[in-house]
Image (cartoon, rainbow, N blue to C red):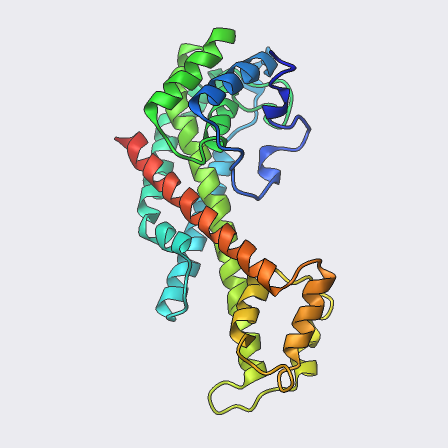
Length: 299
């Protein structure tokens, strides 16, 4: 059993879970596959004999709260300036209060004394963190943050067929799922803000190249010089492609420069536009799932 499902387990290393900035999103599992994954996870986890010496989660929760607030401010400023935002950004700003409510509930429902009593993991990327936290992380990752009570029930029952959880861990399951959902929303908000910043930079460059208002276009060599040795972020390149798409290459040398830079990065304009649209669509679905799941858990 352990060998059969080992490829579905979280990667074991000394790298903490916060080191990865990508969304918590793995292969989407059916409920039967989730049960198999729960069994393999239960067989693989090793619990520390000194749970009181585990690593705290409170600091990361505070960091996530601050990051979400900053993302809210950035998106609100973009809306105020009538700059376009993505659907995922709309979900985030419209439901920011939902995330804030979750964070308040986490702080209330997971006091330090209760947290210290939870069994902690002895190895892997979740070393020092509660065993139930990795269980919640796995559930969120393989459901794309979509909470369904029956799926969770079957996931936990499958886990306990191999390794029973304590009563304290079962009580903490809803809290730790909230923590993982907030973590995932923070990661997506970072990506949303990073993309917004890149699009704004691309718009500013396009206006310099094309001439904004009564200003004459700047020479391409001067406008593009600051970007000569920087890798082009996808969202930056896509926005620049869209702004320059209808221009004449003969009069807009930035188009040739952009094509050459993308070629050096092993891609082209059509590919990055498709990939950016795919990533934006995936982010929108995940943010929507997170918000909906937060509401369901609270109910």
